[in-house]
Image: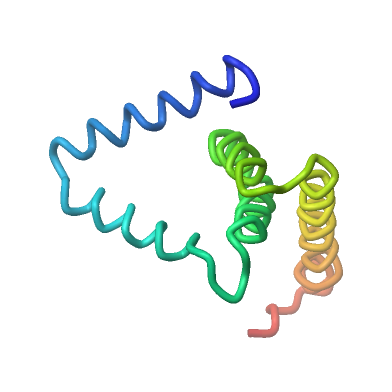
Length: 117
């Protein structure tokens, strides 16, 4: 990992998964199998999948996943510039999300209209 604080947070997640595994081993195994398949090399490289996951982690404001996917992206060959570009794309999507809601839902609310479904 990159620093002890990140290590501690990711380790706490792994410890929590371990506790869940004690009572729900089939759920944990199914989750791990699912994520392993999703992150396997395919049409997208494992590196690109980690960069996508990083962007989603940032958008979801998930600190542990952000740390985890930065580390995984680096381990899959991503460089710091690629990681920062993924962060910039997440910022653009986050800003776009607020903008799209502002020009649709907020405008409808101001006009007293129901949103288009």
